[in-house]
Amino acid sequence: MKTYEDAQQRIKARPRTWLVTGAAGFIGSHLAEALLRLGQPVVGLDNFATGKRENLELLARAAGEARMRSFRFIEGDIRSLDACRAACAGVEVILHQAALGSVPRSIEDPLSTHATNVTGFLNMLLAARDAGVARFVYASSSAVYGDHPVLPKLEERIGAAVSPYGLSKYIDELYAGVFARCYGFSAIGLRYFNVFGPRQDPESVYAAVVPAWVGALLRNQTAYVNGDGRAARDFCYIDNVVQANLLAATVEDPEALDQAYNVALGEQTSLNELFAMIRAGLAPRLPHLRTVRPVHREPRSGDVALSRADIAKAQRLLGYRPQVRIMQGLQRTIDWYADHLLETLNAA
Image (cartoon, rainbow, N blue to C red; front, side, top):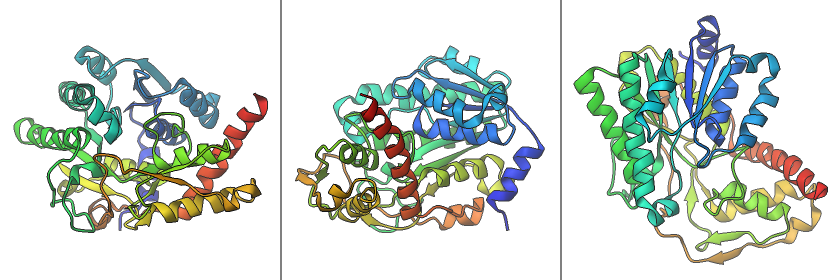
């Protein structure tokens, strides 16, 4: 049976140069940190459209000075084929995370979403193919399921797209399949479901729900729920996403290649339940939050009411076994934001 521990040992035993695109972002910085801890040379690429220099500082602090000597950062944009080619030079494995996320952002600005998520993705595929990269793992999204109503979500059952963002990620999967058929270039897509954890931006108008609520409550601001709170998601802690990426990057079974996989817990938590969990997690630090209530507002356009993943395919072909459940992940996240945000607020 393949395990995450086996994958980590394989990575340690054979250092290779890895490229992490979106390395200054939430997920990308965690991937770079994990690789540096495993003794790998890492190239990071980011244009800071959504990534933050602070995340690179946090990465350096977490990885340590000695490991950071194996990290090389390139400020560049995947919308430039030249930038992609420069980043891919000498690289053996790519973890492609760079994208413009957020369903609402894509509805407001579909052109930018397409330019980054589709044209930028195609640039990365071309550069990786021409550089002879051995493995290309990329971030897809649960948004590709669109309006398909059946739960849990199975990889082979896709509905009609309900946002430019979901469409862009599905186009990426189609392009990856075309590259496999036309050029023999293998790629693995990971359909992330509602990833959360430390370093996720709570400030953006497009902030995901977990950092948005934690940040608001820590600042004694209003936490807003879009809709009546009965909408439910499959929330997945960042460590599980790191695991899925490293497994996909090292899997040797030919059947596992040229596939897309759900990366989630296979569980469902309503927004009302999630708010109660976050409030309970913050209450020991801030007792006045025990009675706080969110404010409900209209649902957002493009949001799907219910989402839950079937993770059997990733378990079978990749050996994926999510190790951090939602309560444990929320507590780690809450503790991190409390330490960082409260420190900033107290200093202000």
